[in-house]
Image 1: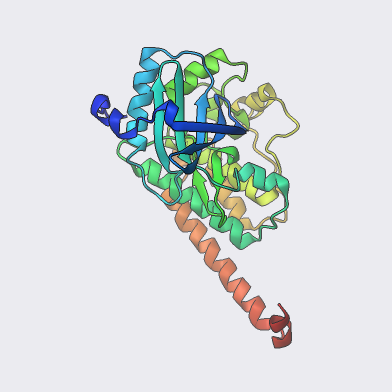
Image 2 (image 1 turned 45 degrees about the horizontal axis):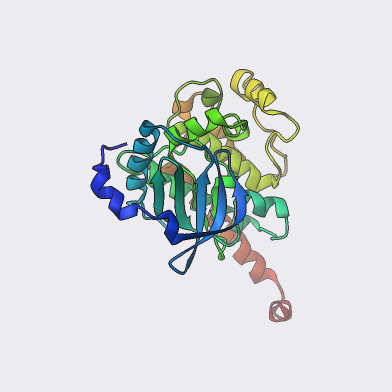
Length: 298
């Protein structure tokens, strides 16, 4: 992270706890609780970090990162509005998206998502992540998964819950939750090696698998078994045979064991756009083949 003059920047993003009205809980993360809130009449999401008190270093690091987040502007990145940064209370305020997370959407199975919609959602995520990776300095998510991807009214997907590694680390040490969710983590991360942008690419491959199957990754294994299977035995999720071969090759390229050989989000965006063109042409030719009276009824 760039060194930021946190004292002057503080004023830009600092929100007073007393200005927030915190309502019902709408989500539980590995290091905090997300609640619906009101801030000067606007409905917002308030993420309250769960540790009782944070070290001065963690708060300093938190302030630097939120000063950076305040500069982020992209249609596929959750809009950050501000933060409360006192040692006793650490929380972040962002826009509230009505449909919740992509994980919830896929597991509810109430919205029938056709392949064109799934490709659009994958493109949203790739574009948001590409923006974060191309930022100066690059922002590595480190916890990319479907429950950290939020969906708005129009089914646009936005990347959320990135950064804040120091605060998250301190929180993990004091909670029973362990360290995040291994089902989405790259093998090198599971082996405790250093993570970079390419570790996010692996996680994106798991999200592509979820979009294709609407299943929960490694559902039958516990965390330790996932760490063993993926981190040390080079196993990957099973891919159903009936999925488009282009989608399969996208997933497999993200899961390359040699992180350097995984694509960038820029490359993934281009490949997803090719897939999008293919499905658009298919859709148009199917419509053209339908009898006119059928289309009028629809």
